[in-house]
Image (cartoon, rainbow, N blue to C red; front, top):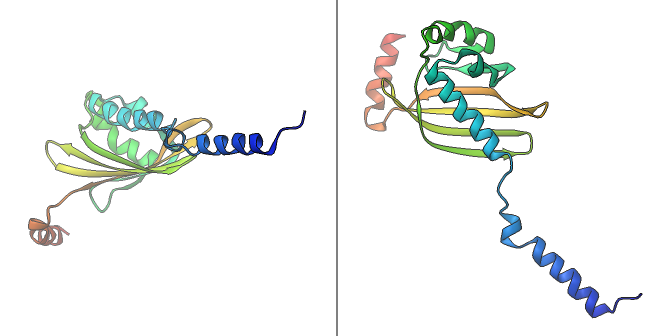
Length: 162
């Protein structure tokens, strides 16, 4: 059966409009829940001192950057550093204030504002990658946020400590 040109045009136009509708353009990222759960779980595991599950969230070749300039660790080095903190059942506690995601497909990166009772507001930044069907943290960096109004003073103290 041969389709009339007007009917064909109508079907093609409707298909195009439906595929470009905001409902389809703004489809939520199916992976966002999984990667948020990964990072939220990381913070919960640290708070509860769950050493094994905390480190299972990282890839085998992950890098962790701490707040001190000497703290650039492979995941094995970071495990050795963190083990004593986790041995007593308490790691460290950071409350997530906000998190932003970028990237797509199997590689994403994020930044988050955190709060810690001793350090105040901090920023975590990281990269996650889908490895063998599972999201893993491949890079994480924790920095302290210094308000501009005291940045010079903190900078001078940092130089004095060096």
